[in-house]
Structure formats: C-alpha cells, structure tokens
Length: 479
Image (cartoon, rainbow, N blue to C red; front, side):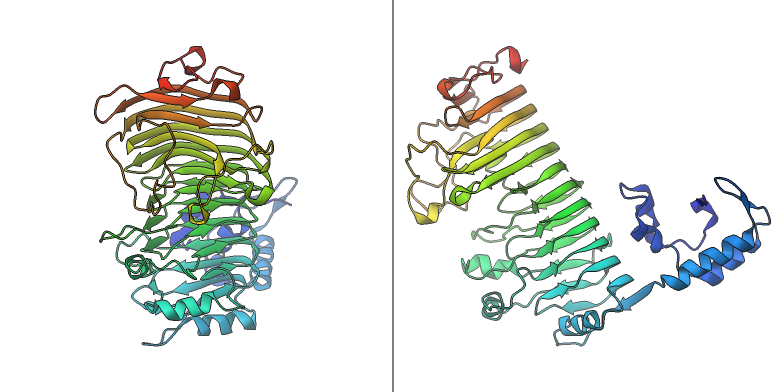
C-alpha cells in the first residue's frame, strides 16, 4: 500500500527539509528527519476528516495514524548533542557514545552552534544507517604538530582525522552561518614549517551508499580533504575549502575532493587550495563534477602506479572557473601502468592565468625520487573517448614558478614547451583513441601566438587541432 502525503501538510518539518527537493529527495534518511513527533502528527490528522486515497482503497485517517505512529515507535529518531568541556579533547565523549551504539542508527549527531569543539584525536564512525552528522558549531584540530604526527604515525590511526567506515543514508552537513560550522585544521603552521611528515587526511567518507556532503567549511586544512572511496550515490554540494597560505609557504597536497566509487555528483563547491581541486581515482565510475573556483587542476589520476590496472569510466567535469592555477584539465598516469580510462569529458571551462589549460601525460612520476623516467616499456594506461569542449581563457605565458616546485627543473616542466601551449598531449603510440579538443578559444597573457604540443605518431584521429609542436591551428574536429 502506497500513501501519498503532501509535504505542505506538515508545519513541523525541520529546517533541513529542503533536502527533499535535492537529488536525494526520496531518501529515507531525509524523510526520517521530518518524522519526529507522533503528537504533532495526531493534531494534524485530526484536521483532516477526509479518507486518504491509496493505490487500491480508501484509508481512514485513523488507520493511517496507527500505521504512522507504529512506524515512528519502531524507528525512533535520536538527537545526540556532542558534549563540550573547555580545554579538553571532545572526541572521546563522542567515541564513547558511538561505542554504546544507540546513535549509529536513525539519529542526528549534533555539534551545537555557539560552541568550539576541540577535536584533538581522530573520530572513527561505526557503520551508520539513517544518520546525519550536523556541524553547527566550530571544530578545531590541535595546533600541536608533533602531537598530531605521533597519532598519524601510530599503528592504530584509522587513516583520516574523521573516518567513516560504511553505512546507508548518511549526511555530513555543515552550516550556512558565515561564523559557525568551520573546521579549523591550523594548516598554516604546517606549511610554514614545510612539514610533510605524518600529515592527516581530513574526511574519509568511505563505503557510504546514498550519502550527502553539504555546507561544510574547511579552514586551512593541513592536507588532503574529502575522499569518497568505495561510496555510491553521493551528492556533495555547497562546500567550501579554503587552503590559502598568508605567507610565502605553500599548502602542499591540499586536494579538494578525491572521487572514488560510483554515481557521484559534486556541484556548487568553492575550493581554493594548493593541489587538485578534483582527483578521480582508480575504480571511479559515473562521476559528475560541476563548478569549482580555484585549485590545482581538474585531474583524472594519477593512475597505474607500480603497474596497477586502472579502471575509470564515465566522468563529466563541467562549468568550472580556474584562476591562477597550474593546470586546467589534466590526465596523469604513471609510465608502466595498465588498464583503461574511458569516456571522460571536460566541458565549459573558463580559465585565467593558467599555464597548462589542457594537459595529458602518460609519463607521470614522483619528483621526490629522481628525474623523469625514460622507458621503452609498452605498458601504459590506455585512454579512450576524451573530450575537451568549450575552453575559453587566458594562458599564463610569463615566467612562472609554482609553489610546489622543489626541484630543478621543476617537476611540471615539459621539455621543449614554450609556455604558450593551450594543449599538451604527452602520449605513447597505440595507447590513445578518440581524443578531441573542440571549441577551444585561448589567448596568452602577453599576446603571443597560442601553441600546442602533440606527437602525430601517437594519435590516429583528428584531435581538433593540428597535431604538432607549433602554433594552435584548429581542424575540422575542433570546430
């Protein structure tokens, strides 16, 4: 029996009921946030003396009331307010409550507005079902670098400062209040010290089906931020990551979203950082990423490290403004990798002062372990059906030094490049199929002619421009 009840009947809906109009509008998690008071429901149903129409029969309000009340009693909603003790670590109190188990199903875990919580040790959530973690107060990491390094370096570190181990219908929700809902990582001290040993990842939103990450605000995170490894049907929107140094030090590895899993939608997020705005990792399928300002690039990979077999499919990255970033759209795989990245589209990308608007390399390497490798091996991660469409902007072609450069030449230096290239296709023969750049409209900051780098022996199709190391000349596929 299906019963349709219009939301307009319920004046007791909670402020987060706008989730019902989002991508997950039919989620049981979102609906559960609204079904909290049997008493209120009784008063409302008394106002309606008409029977309720179902698929086959007329049901009286009394029968409906009994059914709904029974459901509420069976699935009671719990709100746990995380306690705070001034000057103390607030993580253990939450961990103790989670260990009891009565807040890991059908409940809200609330960090209260007006309170700054000390999260001095990691939080590892058990498997959650129909749970919302709501951050209305501020959260702060420890400002003791050594203390955090000791924790990260220990054998029992869960892998991130906030670790989700799995679940269904899980919402991680911050606040739209400009003063509250911030998570302060105190990353500036780490950047100033150029300290890259035992840095914690931020939020491992892992193995979640039907998840939401919304309205989160991260201030100067130490390093990597959100990861969605193993998750499915996740909607991440209206999140803000500010990883900007106010000194000459560089915020290394402050990646925004590391997309792993399937059926993921990222949109309306604002990221200013020192690394990839988005990275799409091995195994990711059906990813949509919309709008992000700032960041290091919109990257697929790196893939194939150590000969691993890559499998990335169906990725759409669109409506993104890239300003003062090293890369625009980027694919990177390690020499010697295996597998396939297929059906990847970057579309409607605006860029300003970006040295490498479009960059593909199958020869990625770690600058920390030596020079770029020179190999004759035939194994490489293959790419198929790559589309770069409607790129408009300004190439940064003046002398450029990016903060992550710690080698000479810089790790991102491309031999033979002039700094005026809108597209660099660094490919191996017989590894790339149907790579096309269409509707590309670049200019250089100095007014010099735009160039490209492309080895014609590595491609068999019309890539949308003349494939050579020379001026950018559109071809039929690029019109």
